[in-house]
Length: 197
Image (cartoon, rainbow, N blue to C red; front, side, top):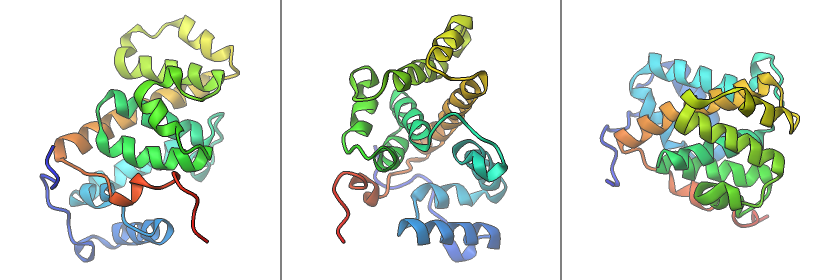
């Protein structure tokens, strides 16, 4: 895979003010600008739509909605299904966030390689079984798949969240892969080693 993106990243100072403001907020919080924010900014209308849906799924409280999925659950879905889609960017970036939310330095690597052998709860395993079926064989989803989730306390709304996150990141995976988007180096160590004080 090429180490340089197929599409040049735009200069932050040339972007519309709303995009620039949001990207600078992310930079302030993370300490760097994740490449996805600049890569997709080459088409501002698509950037706005992408991040509006992203935020509605990944931070539902910002749109006044509650979810039965934790932040760690959501990142675990992204990491696991992105691995199935062979998306380096999303596995590395969301794996870093997963490690931080779950406070487990090994979990992202485990779920990316084989979630069935990962150090996760039976509830999370059921969630990932459903997500992987949506990812790879969504046409085969049946009532029994919902019943398996219900047995672990998930609601039908939670099932919708699992499916929507899986589907949305299927789009994200494909955009990142075809465009040659590379993970920022900062992501590789996040959540692996204790923060220096």
